[in-house]
Image (cartoon, rainbow, N blue to C red; front, side, top):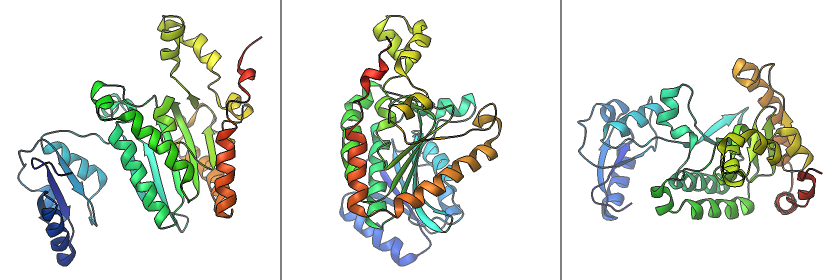
Length: 307
């Protein structure tokens, strides 16, 4: 980012690291503001800038929500739809990548209902390349109706961003487990859903297009979404039969939303087993199996046609 109207915020309590990075960014044409603590960053005067980037080297006591709030206060809200972050999973470091759709109506509006923009897919790919470099498995949670279809999204190359992810995730030399939780729609889902194992929660859906969009195209009537959903075969049992997914994760009675703790435990049980299985595979065998898995998709297409 070299736009002189933008600011890079650096927050770190290591004086030497902070000054070194500040000098490097200034040499490359960035405007920089550095802070020695999280509290100083959050209490700064609001800069009158059109956009900003928060670079989180180490931010003690500074949460992602704090960062998001600070960005919004800078004058141009930038909701995070695709989140990434390294985490410790049962003693092993992993990279988590996932859509954030929101809980209540207010949060869903802020999160753009889970419609990710091209920057989100590029950020996800950068994080996954970092995971590859340090041999960290990647765990992906997919929950989106589609990629954001707005004009600005097309102008910034959303199709290219998704295409690059499809190509690079296929060759990424680190274990990848994908979980479709809730909704996996179109290229917006597939853009982070190439992996060694693809799982679906019992009542989730996964399709090449949202049923409403399919109905609008085929019948010129969005009200035909029920017929479209049936024809698309978007449920977990249908997709398991077609070889699109590898396993179905059970949900509590009534769905995952009725008991989040129980749903999380069910995900944990399956994820632990499959992640261990994929991590034990030889690199060459794992990449070959990943390629063969996706290369074979579509060969059972005739089964989708109802007689």
